[in-house]
Amino acid sequence: MYRMIQLESLVPETLPGVALFIKHGDNHVLYKNPNLSFTQNDKERLLDNNVNQLFIKAAEMSTYNQYVEANLPILLSDDDIEPIVKQNMLYQASINYVQEIFDSPAIAIKQNVERCRNLISLILNDVMNSDGVINALSSLVDHNTYTYVHSVQVAAYSIALHVKMLELSRDELMDVGIGSLFHDYGKVYVPKELLDKPGKLTASEFMEVKKHPVYGYSTLKDLEIFTPVALGIVKHHHEKENGNGYPDGLFSYDIARSSKITAIADVFSALTTTRSYRNALSKESALEIMYGEMEGSFDMQYLDTFRESLN
Ligand SMILES: [Fe+2]
Ligand SMILES: [Fe+2]
Image 1 (cartoon, rainbow, N blue to C red):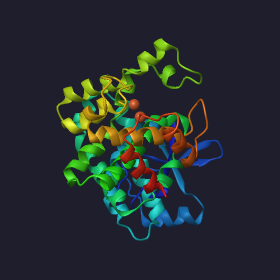
Image 2 (tube, protein in one colour):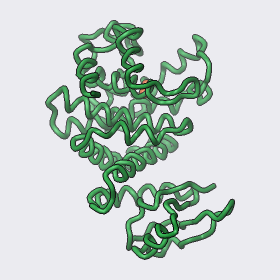
Image 3 (cartoon, protein in one colour):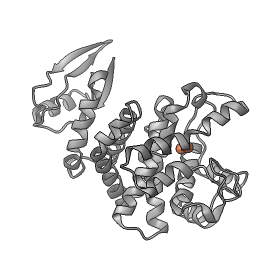
Image 4 (cartoon, rainbow, N blue to C red):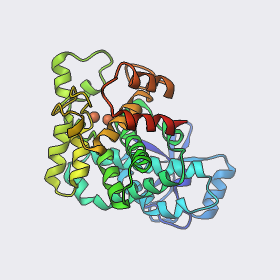
């Protein structure tokens, strides 16, 4: 099994630490051994031959992810790389991180907590400096990676909304970013068939899916690395203003601001992304649903600000 990687994610004169392959017809041919540097010459020659993508073995994805994350600050400050490409690299690295961490035992989160903080910090910088988040992410979605892309998208939207609506310190924004990145972590404990089911869920299936905020909350709480703000987002991102949400059926006055804001980011991300049971909705249609049939779910002041920020 091979995974495609972007040529731009490799920093010249560094050791990627993984074997690199090129695709020739249906075959993957070894291009470079793990212990050889990737040089500027290599990069130019590949680009001259219209090669923008290389391949690595799926089993080496974790090594590659860590290599990219370690080099991200260099890549993101490289003026020769286009802003949109940089943004794509950042969000792709974040998606890869989420996929890796969701597929590993929970303890990996604790062992890798610095990786998470570094990525959220870079996303925070990106959100502060641009409003292109939406475009950068929408192109990265496919149905196999929905939960991972969605997690990163919700983190970016939620940070952006918090910046617009509340005066928070950078540390507080980091907590918000971490909480929203992990808001759906509990889904790793829900059977995949239910999450991907094309039709309507039965009542008992829906009961099962509705357990994910509590599963996520209790697992992450036990790691003892998440703040109450971050944990609150995980547990309460499906609460509704009118008390009809879950798991606790909280009313407006009992729902934390960060949970209210993340709830908006969450629903908007879900509606504007293609799912197994429907195509992605436009921003306008998503807002129509959030104001219309979902009336009573959201804090209106936050929702209004969100709508304005999209224009
Ligand atoms: Fe959720
Ligand atoms: Fe979600």
